[in-house]
Image 1 (spheres, rainbow, N blue to C red):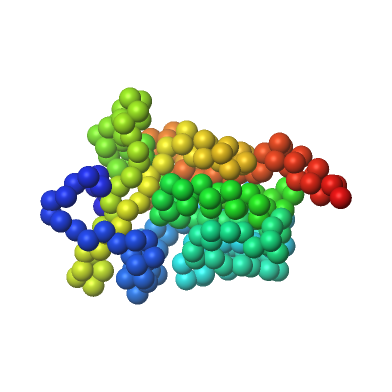
Image 2: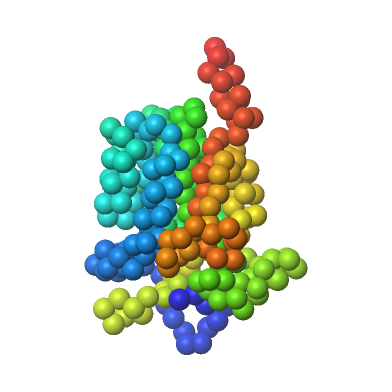
Length: 243
């Protein structure tokens, strides 16, 4: 359930993402099961469109089951799981991964600065020709959030008053827990990628309930395949040639 973060009645304790998912861990498999059709559709996109990937990195891995299944499906012999956005990219990992996955709106659980840093670090981690594949919640998804909410978000973006930040609340063992979450627009995602030296290669919209692919942003969440921009790629090539 999403509500504007400015709402203060009733007063709720807002947890950071790490604490929120710590409480959710006991029910994680149960929650995942409610989105089985959506996850299956996103996973199919990753498997079909991912490049040959001997090494895969999954960011925001949860229990790791999904990442292991995807790595096996793309023929990876090496899988690295990261559940926390790292402030610095270890030099030993730079340029190592043919495929980086970041699934189920993981980017939406980082604040603005951490989100941009995570994308820049991801660009450093990609091998030549590598791909970042991720999905994010789409704030124009009327099929899930309702037409009134989607239109309201669209109108606020048009006049420059939208920020995409909301509160997400779940009932865990009778306790209501709440955390901040960011819900994206397609234009915003493209801008974030450009700032990180990445570019969209392909995009899809997938219905959050049925897993069906959609032809409009009003009907699904956003799934993205991104690659390093030619400018960044040329810069890396020049740096490798420098003494």
